Amino acid sequence: MKKVILLFAILANATIAYANEPIEMRIRPEQDIKAPFRVFDTKNIYTKIALDTITGRVYQVHFATQSNQFYGILPINESSLLTDNIKAQLGRFTLYETDNMYNFILVDQIDGRFWQVQWSYEKDKRFIIYLPFKKE
Image (cartoon, rainbow, N blue to C red; front, side, top):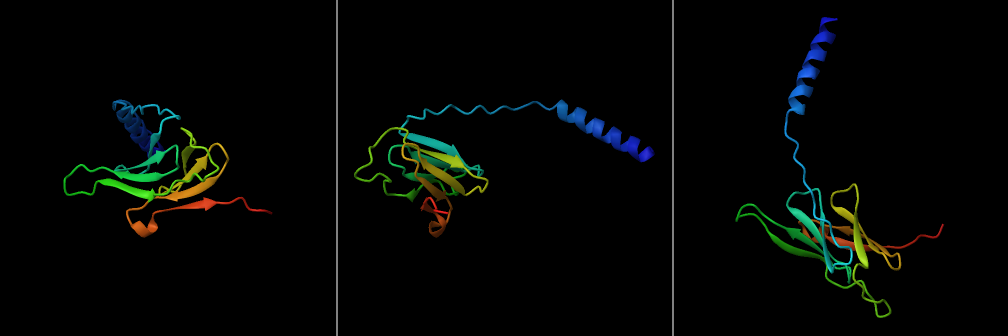
């Protein structure tokens, strides 16, 4: 019984201490879905993903807090995903986060094409691959 009371006291103190901590709210700016470029968060605090919403080009954007760290923009796909018969349009493409921190799903919101996009610090692990519909 003493162990239960002790456990309850510890939990109550931890809850009170946690409740007194200030709450920090991060409000992200809303993005215009019709903008030519959009930036998406990754689970890596130094990496964002930039999307050209007209062509489907995707870039890995790194920033640094120290001058000796890597910073810059790395292309994931350098070619437009538009073909001759596909109309260029603002907001045509968007990204969806997956549970894997290195992968996103790129969607052509007009015709329903899908790609897997993987970012990485290593060039040979960065790619985009078309996801075809499979016939069952």
